[in-house]
Image 1 (tube, rainbow, N blue to C red):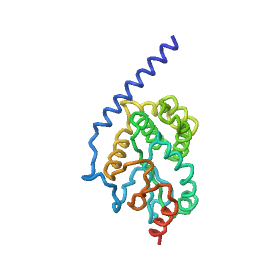
Image 2: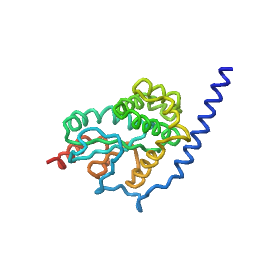
Image 3: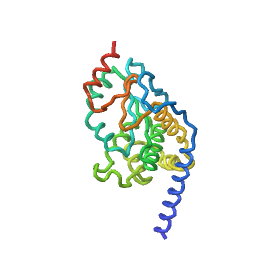
Image 4: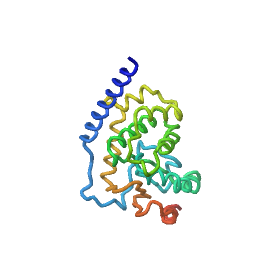
Length: 223
């Protein structure tokens, strides 16, 4: 009986997720007239998770996908230096925008991150890191691992969110679907072609792992 109940619950979540994907993919989004990345227009970060001084003269934005192994690598190698040198010192603001390049799992992880941010914004970055930490080794990154069960488990370990509310936000009853759709619109508007994509005061880096260029662009924008 218990196994049957669990099967029913899992089936309901699967159906709900399909509904969410259909709704999201049909949301109207502003799309740039050209697919070329913007190099002069700053990304709007209103309502986005942001670290550092919101009034800093330099804005650094990461477009990332929780299913992307390069995003995990960037977070483990480049981000710690960026945080120490520029975020913690108040020289820049750093924001994260969801990308949905890997389909349903990307959408599910994005909905979870937005739900956590809405419910417990102070815990967002710990959940964000834990979600990337949960990503399998690069050889298995295409295997399905983003599930409702795993997301709620990570949220329970790193945040104080209402798990039932989180589960609702992973279904067609989601209250954060609009925010994920907004992120998808920003991805299209700014011509994001790969993840991670890093923009510094509106300039898209050709190589997000080139820390010398990151430093140069930040210093150029810092009084």
